[in-house]
Length: 395
Image 1 (cartoon, rainbow, N blue to C red):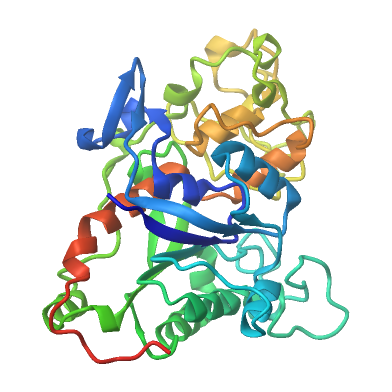
Image 2 (cartoon, rainbow, N blue to C red):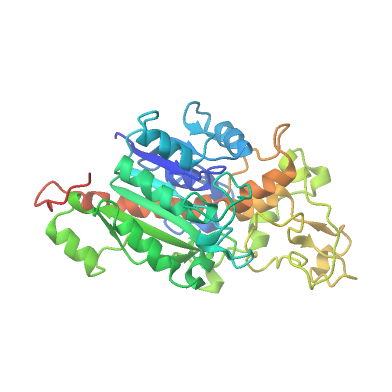
């Protein structure tokens, strides 16, 4: 069948894009719906491809473009430009966005994150991630959701998905403002109440909570479907598959087959932060719990990524590993905790371990993206019927 087209903004290394397309490998225990499995290989399985294909991606990070193109093996899809500049060019007829059925975008979260300064809409950083000299403007980093909104208004997709950190919900009425702004894209989109999804509830071995905004074009819905959406009889959000803590996929399950970095031929596993242990009072100085899920894999850790293991002297709890050296999580271990497949090359001669950590920490876990994609796939034909259209123009 003909693929549905996806335009991806703030794409990073493509975590959400990988999830939306499928066809990647994860641990078998992470998948409850066996119909999604294409092939089983011992403790892992490859997932079936979805009906979606990424035809446009963009980000301002050069390393994001390098890693994205290396994995997807596509040229002329990824644009190394700010969404602000691209939207301006499109409005001036200097650039044309491709047609797309779906728009996705995880707009920058630093200004909403509890771990950051929480400047929100008042961020003094520019859309190019440099410090602004003057007062915050519509082009400041904290306002980039607005430019995603503008891109949606130009492309006019049937569906859109926007993502950010959970901390956005505790910054006054920012969540409501963003929701209403998305709803008012040319007056043509239904945006259901945003929901916080925890990746651990979808087979990801990590405690990672993110808020999602999802919208659909009104003019493509019939009255009965619109009523079902309004009455919550059709949900845009995927149902959880790992609903109890006993169901969660543990850190040990996804890391136990990896050798020590010094014994690995995988460059992304060989590399790990050498930052020393500073004591438990600092962020990132804790040891992961092998039989539990990992803490959120962060991008802005400044080398203080969590420890794979601590020594006994520093309070390490993994008794059976006391004879192994104390060290932090490797790049590959972080990638696995984010459900990236092992054939994704993060550390290369063009991408350092430090940059790789940032790319991984900023990404949507591919498996969470796959759940969202498969759910949208399952309701697509229910939503977009050809009868009784509501006469609302999306200009």
